[in-house]
Length: 397
Image (cartoon, rainbow, N blue to C red; front, top):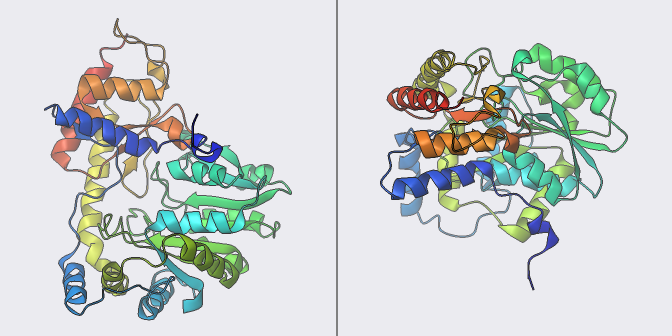
């Protein structure tokens, strides 16, 4: 007899966390494993943010917080949206949560009914599909490839829409591909959305400031779509605050209130200390992030150059985030005499066990012919990791 629900039995473990766990198990055995499976910056939280957190502790910010967040934090986020994105929100339209992941889940829970369709451009972040499934929605994936820089077209979007379509959920810049939609590309997609008023857009912009090509553009800045878009952001990536757990959203007031209602029954408000630190982060001029952004840009170029030297691996040139998403299907069906590679998961396990590099298989992102490398690590480790990958793949005939 099992006490578990069908809901949890139908839920998949996060592939990124699973691969990281396996990497740590090998490390515990004394093996030198390079972990390129997790999307976590290897930088420290900026000192000016840490100082504010220390002051908050000394000032006894140790009590329950309002569910959507402290008023002055909500106001600071409104100013951030206005400054960086040209979006005019009221504090009542802002909700802070324990990470952008919770922000997105709140919106999905607040809007998706059983049988509602949610369009996901694939590859998509590993948790999107599971969030939809958990809430009894139906995932409608739009497939893309490295040849098109993993971008969907307006024609593909139009074809995917049905009367049951409730949400369109995407990240820009994208996890896992690093794809960056330009303003013109988003405006072209916007022309499709203007014709379908029943669709709510969730724009995950957590990698907003890790952008190597152009000024970031939010799809909510298209006036006709502002009241049909939820803009999600947070502190984890740009400010290297993954462990602080602070995400936030700007939404139509009806949706924001629904998210507060849901969150009030789950976690209540985010950490008081993190919220005080978050005020300093969102008020800071984005120029303070320039050194980290420059380091990621250098690492991206290094990783692309090295991966292009690996036989039979195909890569694009991602414009943001800190991921590369190579096409590796050439190696499917190949063997070293002991192990035969059936798919990307087999390939990642082979590289982990033989080469001691942890990667994330693309099937978790809706793209089974690929795997993801995170270059949120040093140039030395990137160079060594690709050298190991190249040698390991050479074993397959």
